[in-house]
Length: 329
Image 1 (tube, helix red, strand yellow):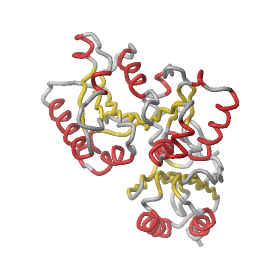
Image 2: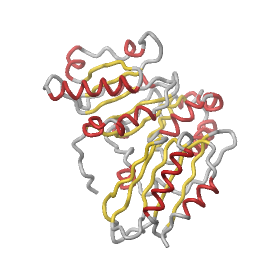
Image 3: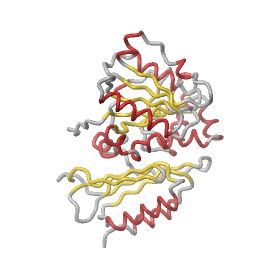
Image 4: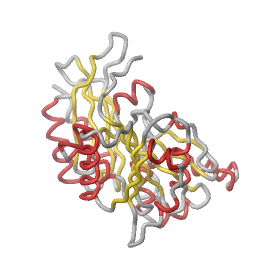
C-alpha cells in the first residue's frame, strides 16, 4: 500500500484529563532517539506556567537541535505562534519535522484541531496527523461521570492511551474498555504504564485523515450502534451500499451543522456517491466539516458509504431517517 506523502508538517495534538500522564508522554517523545526535530507547544491553564518547567530538561544540544518549547493559551495565540514558526522556518532560523501540541487537562481539543482548517496559512503548511488522548485508567471513570471535558477528549481521539494499567484489575480494565468503545469506537486503544508506548503507534500515523485510516484498517468504521445511559456521549454508525446523492448529502450536512453542530463532536466517513468513480471522504469537528474526493474505488472493493457520528444526545433513529433520504433515486 502506498500513501501519497504530503509535504505539509504533521501536527500531533496531545490531550488528556488532569494527571493522566501527558507530560510523561511528552518527555518520552522528546527523549526518544527518533531523529526528528519537534516543535513543542504547551498550552497552559492559569497564570503560572508549570508544565513547561516539568518538561524534561534535555541537554542543551538536544533542546537546540530537536525541540522548541513554547507556551500558548488560546486559539488566537496558537495561530500566532504557528505563524511565527512558519516565518522563522522560511528565514532559515529554525527547522523542524513535526509539531506537538500539549493541551491543558481541562481543554476540549476541537478548537486546536479547527485552527488548522480555519487559518489559510496554517492549512497550507500543516496537517493534523492525529489527536492522542491519555487516560488515567484508575481515575478516569470518576472523571467521565462528572466532567464533560473528559468525555469530549475521548470522543475526539484518534488514539487513546489507557495509562497506569498496573493500578487496575483485569476486570476494571475490561469494563473501562467497553465504556470507551461506546463513546468512541473508531479510536485505536493502547495499554501503557508510564506512557511506555511505541512511538510508531503515535507519530506519523495519519489517523486524522479518514481515508488513510481506512487504507490501514478497513474495518475502522465498523457497525457500532452504541448508546450508554450513563454518558452524554455516544456514537452512531451507518453503512449503505446504495449510492448517495451528493446534493442531498450537502443539504443534510449543512442542516446538521446548523441544528446539531454543538452536539456533534466528531463525525467522519467515506461516501459512495452516484456518478462518481472516486470515494468522497468527509470529516468534521462541531460546526466545521469538509468533504473531498479521494482515490478511485478499486475493482475488488465493495462500494458503500460508511459514517460514524460521535456526539451528545444523538438520536439514532432520526439520523438514520435523514441518512436514508440521501440515497440517490
